[in-house]
Structure formats: structure tokens, C-alpha cells
Image (cartoon, rainbow, N blue to C red):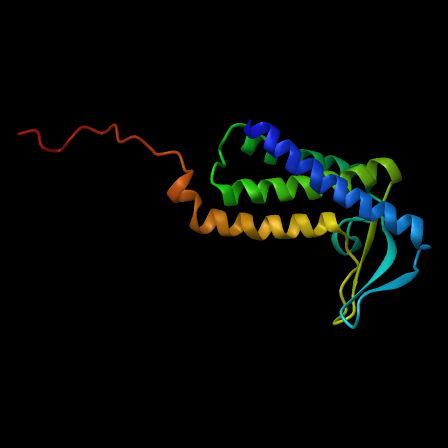
Length: 166
């Protein structure tokens, strides 16, 4: 049952990301913008051939490989129930959903479609999958710093003999 719930959440995130990217590609030419939230954000179609801030631009195979390894590692944490607390699970699912959404673009197109363009300050254009990854990473940090030890850490057994022998 847990696996089906995780799969459904991932499918919703991936479908939402891909639908928004599809809408962007079908409605906007490369570099074209349209208003979204006045004075805060517009939608601008951009193709990102790299990772964050276009780092590793043109290294598509490397980016696919690194992302795939990271997604497998996060999936293992969930499947082996290393992460069980709802906040940690949510963090992992968000990271997986965003990572898979972007890896689909890299494999299918050779680049990632970005569209969210902040007007409040200068910031690289990003997409919904990026939002999932960033929110997941923040939640993951909160989970690890304040929750993991209390709820999910494996308890070490104290096998040393008692000092009360005399």
C-alpha cells in the first residue's frame, strides 16, 4: 500500500512538471515571455543544457548519469525504509519527482525546459521539477537535522558487559 501511495505521488509530480513544460513549449517560442504573476514572475521559455545556473552545460550524458545515481540512492532510502518519518518521506518523494522530471527532458530532448522567470530580482529561469528538488532538499535538511535521530536512526545495541561485577 505504501509503495502505491509513493508511486501515485511521484506520478502526479512528474505529470504536473511535464504538462507545464509541454504547455510552455506549445505556447511560447524560445526566449518568449508571457505575464504570470504581475511584477513578481513571468513565464519565459528557456532551454537549459546544463544543471543549476547552466553549470556543466553540454555535459548531458554526465548529468543524466549523476541524476540517475542520485535518484536510485533516494529510492533505496525509501524502499529499504531507512527514511520512515512523513517529513523525510515527503522530502525524498519531492527530490525523486523533480529529478525524474528533469531527467526525462534530458533523455528525450537533450536539455531541460525552464519557464519560471522571477522579476523581483535577477535569478536564473527554473521549472517545476527544480522547485520540487529545492523544497525536497530543504525539507530533507530539516528532517535530518531535527527528526532523523529521534525517529528513524537505527538504535545501536549496547553489547558491553555491565561494570557492576564485584
